[in-house]
Image (cartoon, rainbow, N blue to C red):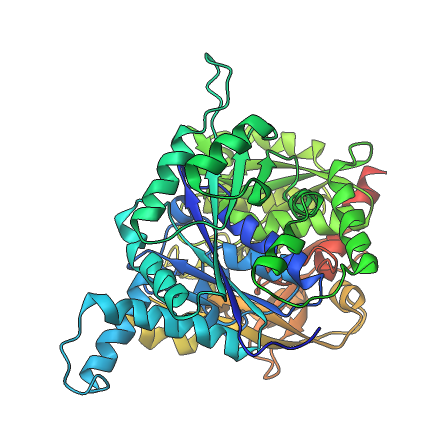
Length: 551
């Protein structure tokens, strides 16, 4: 590829409804452009006043994804990393709160040289500066910017204004892609374009004309609807891309390429790019094909508490865990069947524990607070005693340690300080570095966050899975295994197979294979490093143990 002087910018905006698929669209566009030899990075612009996603409730916002540098972000950042197979940093994520915070800091530091600082143009100018920085940071050919929310919302007006200003400054280097929804009311039976027409006009009202329209619908878009959308939204028919519902999000880039989207994007941006890399593309297509494999399955029970949102189950609370399970299952030619079980149910109905026997494996993912803890501890005990493969992530590892202290060491009141600070047997305590932070009630962005190294013990499940003596994983926690309890737990048979380089922090706990096929927990979050074409080794080891149980 001939390197161009100017970086190109693709804004992805949404129309009609939230959750229309902007993040997956942005990720898919990035993948197909990367496959043409372009260096791509992605950036999420969240309209929230929150400075980051770390203080948001998962049932309202979905999973908090942690970047390598510790930034707590929206779950779409995880999609970007997984699809593009890259690591992003805090320069790739911004919120309204973060933008305002920086503008106010600059005003206080006299960086505006005494000018009257205004919402327009200074807020959009700060946004534009951040977008450019994200591109320069990695010398990208293309920066994809997803603007959160839906066109017409008051919250994202300033981000749209930033896009308009950048387009005015670089008219040939900026394009807009609108992802909009076309409903088919059941009593009418006809796909309706009117909501998307209105969304297009709302976007025009912000001074922006969409260059491409991604038409989300239950079924493929017919030519009649394409023609209608073309003349009503001023988008060429060739640039209206049908995006029907699919069983797997990993089919979406493939469907985009069937409509030659990457070729059209390169053409309108005047980017000189290579022909698609057939070898790499075939790897993706082979991976995506596994999502449709229904012959061989593996049944996983996910024990959580961030599922309930009204009458619905919000699996997005554990999105990265679910995807990590998929990647390792697909690599073993298995289709995972994941059941979301509420931890609270095992507290009120202990008899339900017997239902766990029908699963090939159990995962207890991360979380905070006391709700559902006793239910999780009952599940851990059942999995340990009945030799069901168990994988604990962060809080899930802490539950392992508490359960082992209670039922093997005999310390019946063993607990985490987070749940019961008055317990005589605190086995999960506040990290020393976190005590002053909690005293000051400084909660935002202050946990142990981001990448840290761990050293692995020879002859353990973890060491065998990784095939390495040291690893780097991403963290998000305030609590750790209390140092005072470690010798007693080890004497009782619990193995700490991963430790921090200082030896103080217990990173991985497990039982030997001679005692249990797979009973392992991590203080870190391995799910954040699982990618479609490179599954995480611990998830793969877990899935292999589940398959062996099934046999």
